[in-house]
Length: 165
View (tube, rainbow, N blue to C red):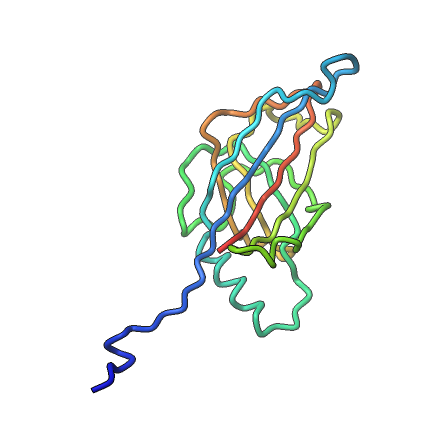
């Protein structure tokens, strides 16, 4: 007797994962310009509304795309129910979006943005959280840092945010 589908419990699952790599660079003119002051890589969660948004794109002709990386000062741990950053202060269009990794195994999609030394924020020099958002302000993923990033007028910040399965 052949096993039934229920007995085998066939499954095809797509797990969505996110990760962020960042580099805080010295932006002062001179021999240390461009050198890394602080860097890190952390995995993060893809929030529930982000998963739903991605699944809705499968059959959609909507031009709304994932296109923004946000910075914030919130320190509360990310949760799948998050819909926004705890304390967002700046965002940047993902100036570089790369689908080159979609042929890799596992496949990934990468979004990159940077902040120049003259683009520090007036409210704080502390960065504790990152977010990936769609053009319609739907948060896709959120990450808090393990160590505070102190961004000043002598730094440049580069962020690469990846989604993979």
